[in-house]
Length: 162
Length: 330
Image (cartoon, rainbow over all chains, first blue to last red; front, side, top):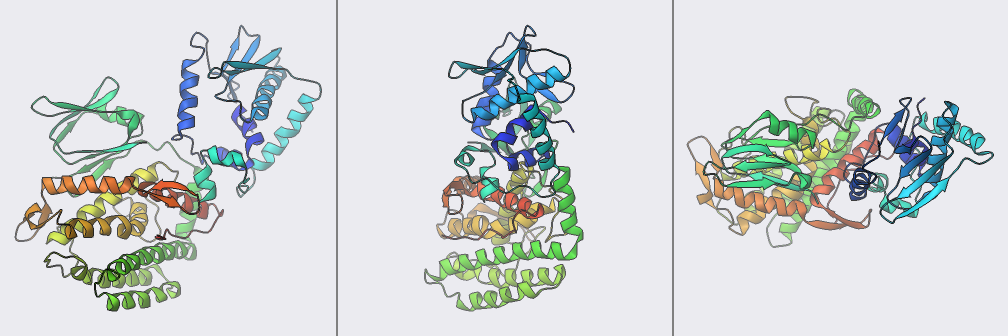
């Protein structure tokens, strides 16, 4: 099973969103936040060669000089999920013999960045998570809404709570 | 945020750099800001080229086309971007299984007839004598849960509509000779209005369905894929009383449309251009009107209610939550 960076990210955000995303029930196209995210992505780091698809599975934003991996985000909300997404990329590349030392979370809009490295035990944790992601995706029914305060700003909000 | 564009002028619709531009024969033009556009309705005689269609397709903007008489011709329906195999399979499963299909179809009629009753109640509270009609429809509604197949259900639906249409002459202040519903072509002013407004709602439903993963040909109340995007017909049943009928009543009762706005011949009747413009303006305003949604606890437009209906249907098909049709609560 190809588990993408987005899926890894969603695992930390909401299992229902993860399941829907995998089953092509998407509601992202119209939300203003998504459009803003897309614009940031298009305008930031114009000189870099961006969006590198690796092994037809993960799509990283860009890798500076093949040394530092960058992931661009709009805001720092749910940063934990973003950190794990970058860790997953590092793990994924390491597995394929590409040694990338560190990753950076970039927030061009608020002019902040944050370093991410794989620490001891992270790889094992990632492997466990990959197994639980697979379990969720293969469920027949979608997981219930999480009723969290982050739901309000999610593109799936109306779908989940109507 | 997104807008609908209703184009009446004759001329050319073309891609001009990164906008769509309608140019009239006298050279005047109007640019359609594509980022803000969700669909385009063409009423005039418009030349289009593939460059324009390609661009509309790329931006996922459906173009709905109407003929000289204002009847719906068809849509340019861009390539499906939201496709979910899993949902499509469920959509079809719920059609082929007789009980599952009937369950959804009943929900549509329950909601549609409830909304019809709400319209009648509204006018009854304003002094119209509609008690007999309301009693009849209430009686018919009781039969809905007991119907055993689609044809029987469609029969009930037909009776409800007939009773409802019979009351229109009591609702409408103007002198109208409206005896029964006649389509293709409509024979009088009311029928012409119903046909026109229904086709607008149909097109709006199509735009909204396009934004979801639902497949527009697989329907439950109407037979699937029969000549048209029949799921639009199903969903529009619920919204016809709320959006369409109310629009007709208010335009006629406020004399915003009168006999003068119609072109009548021996066997057909249609709305003239000016009347059509006034009606569309009101229609668009109505779709943008918002209400406080009691479940979501936020303001949503009438148009968005249609999309929410699609979401509810998806949830039903995915066994997430049982579908109940939208009913007017205010």
